[in-house]
Length: 220
Image (cartoon, rainbow, N blue to C red; front, top):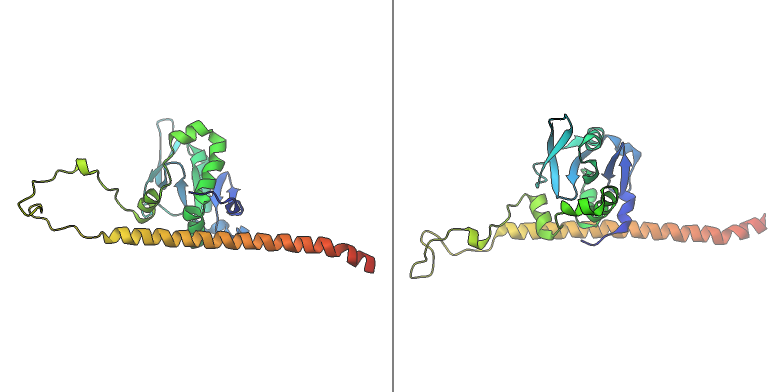
């Protein structure tokens, strides 16, 4: 997944937790709903428990649908008190935030920032590659396909078709999955392009002000 450093404007630290907002971030979003994402193992927090030493442990599954929604204040508290606080990101429940995070480089950027806090060795030990297939299983809750040699298959009959089965057809879920990922990618690229255009406009405006400032000073 390519890194888009323009997503830095969507990342902030709130109450000790890394948060990924939809652009542009606003202080009014302090009461928004978020999900807690383990950016290294690609899992979503579903709850929490405590170890024998009463240390809080977030529980997670590789499924967005199974993840719980939290207020930002509660999510920050859980991330801050977790035994592994530097692997979680609070992701705003917003379509633009989702597009930039999953398909626009936000996930990779958050991985880089958190890896700096815990060290590359520890980060790599829990790293799950962010392949399109892995993201599809996470976002769409698809079951991973079992290896061919792990399935017991009966002997085929004379027609070459296994007894009690029909010829396999195209899997409609794969089409839906790839279509969804494509739309996510388009959304992420569109928002990233918009952020880039706004940044360039700000630079041009600042340059124009700098060029016209002496003229205005002379006129006075």
